[in-house]
Amino acid sequence: MILDTDLDLTLRPMKYPQFFQMYRNSLKNIWTTDELDFSVDFEHLRDRISPKEAHLIKRLVAFWATADNIVAHNLVLNFYKHVNSPEYRMFLGKQLFDEMLHVETYLLLVDNYIPDINERKEAFDAYKTVPSVQAKADFCFKYMDSINDLDKLDTPEKRKQFVMNLICFAACVEGLFFFGSFSYVYFLRSKGLLPGLATATNWIFRDESMHIDGAMGAVAAIKVDYPELFDKKLEQDVYQMLAEAIEVELKFCEDALEMGVSGMSPVLMRQYLEFCADARLVQLGFEKRYNVSNPFSFMMLQDVQPLTNFFEKRVTEYQKGLTVKVDDISFDVAF
Image 1 (cartoon, rainbow, N blue to C red):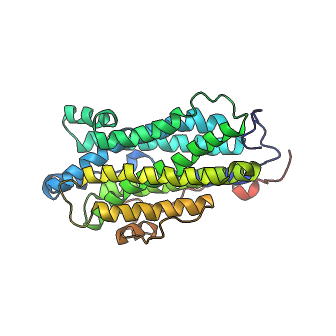
Image 2: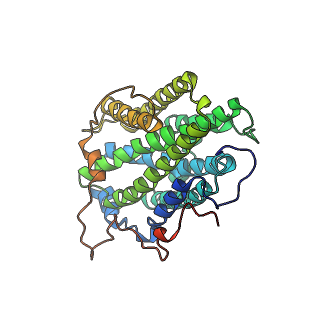
Image 3: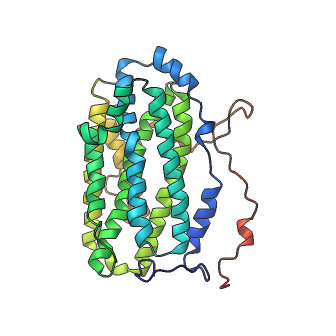
């Protein structure tokens, strides 16, 4: 069983082949920061970005400066420790690589967007000093701290605590906080601004979507193995956690947009976050709570395959080929 306390290191026979498939799929999407180009962004930051938009960008950079390190911290200390599936641990290994790549990307972003050394330090300290960024970090730490002392998930209550942590990071942190920040980038992209940041966000968006799917798959497997955990109390706790995450993200929105940015507002952001929350609830097998539409037409564009001149820049939807085909690996063979 996927939360069994006896460590399983055996890949034959595969108990959870869906996670091995996710791992293989994730290997097709590998990129590096060497492929990013912020040269046009420099011109935009100098000549085209308004003071209102500059404040928004500064807050985004402050959030990103440490966000993926927090996710990676929880991944290593909690996900990898307690999800007892060697197939899922393979997927988590690739996810950790992705998170470190995102950390490197945001380091590069800070170094390029913020030339002043003192302002860079402020960005990296924002999770402790900027209230709207700190609120998001505190939300993460609350659910991490709640299971820090769990060495073994040997009781239903401990398993429930872990499930709440898993759902928190999949549905709230990656599924709301990150998607909220992505929406600001795509809003700027819709105005023809910061193409380098938009490209980086395309690739990170793709990675985070896979991470969410992986975590949701783990939740689904836990639900099969431990259906008794998914009672009305847990469902209500999830609804409450998502509602709390929305309010936390709205505080960030109010801060990021405090100078006023035409086309974005806390009212629209609330609707977008509620739209995302409903999507996460459906993934979890729960009923929608908000029943709202996506208010941001520019966010629908991220699912459209972009038309790219191959000789001008990398095609972002390109997937690397693998020497060994996944079809060559049988999932149901014991040895």
